[in-house]
Image (cartoon, rainbow, N blue to C red; front, side):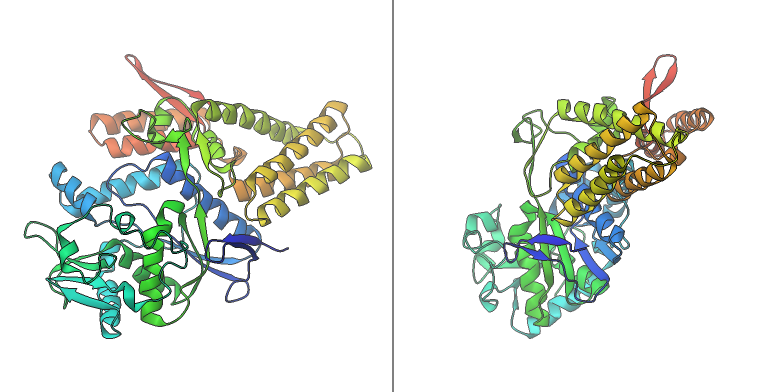
Length: 467
Ligand SMILES: [Zn+2]
């Protein structure tokens, strides 16, 4: 067994050797909770999920932390527009995030800290940076001094780091308060009508980048094994995380940096204006199964751009239907011969090995799914010819178990809902809607969708069907 990852920091494929043998400390940047996450976000979260599942399947003890950014400029703006206190506003989108993640079969990280619950840790880290000369105060805010960190830009290759316009999408008034335009805010002075925390830095709120450094180091220590996220976070967010963390500790922050590539929809950047913007809910509303969306997201290796199309999800649905049917027939088949033909047993063993090897190779999910197809073909041939033996069946089922543990794309039979349970949940959803508890009603829809049950609301009530 040798897991290898493409490390963005060294720009090379490296054997994975955690700092402590057998244990992995991993940090993934989580959602900013001011809206429903879109499928581009979920491409990254499904990649992180496959990564965590694969590491655990390979026997690593995993501690995976993912933050929830529940304070930033957009959140403050939208909470105000909704007329809600910050906490109440973000609570709602955190709940929706987990509902969507559950529907997609994404496992929960071991720790999911909220930024607003870690303000003291952030203030302490900024204090450390100020003492070592990496940070300075200016007009009520505190900034990181990029000139104090000569390695700045090592992750993104430096070419982006020099691009001031890229560094600060919006040129704000604070440009004039900084010593250098590239410097970024660690602590922002709050306007009188904005949420603020008292601190030795003055009343204000943390910048986005410091959140991740403070929470990663709190739960994972000053040096961690894997830091991952979407490629759009590489610069400036991850670059800034490195500068803050290493500036304060003098130790390497993360050993391996893994980045998921962009998702396009119909070949173009997703945007509301282009009409090609999807949340998971949009897709479930159209009747697509969450598991098919997951398949479409995971099937393309994470370092390749993914072109998401509805046709692609439909193809994934057809693919999964056949695959689930094969597994069901295999599970229900009575073995009819004492021993499998040698070639069939060999094919199964090889496909199983190829699946693991493909995932070891920087999570090559395309190769892994090709191995699943070989497995499926061998099983179908054995079933059709009536050449199924007990050992063959056992090995093949174990191979499908591997696939499910690592990729989470199959229908788990033990989770299949009985009709009565579906009806009971639909009745509960109806009651929730009448009580205007739409969050609960949405959660039940997502829960059913995750288990392949689709709802259609009509005049005469709700009808359902299995996907
Ligand atoms: Zn982050």
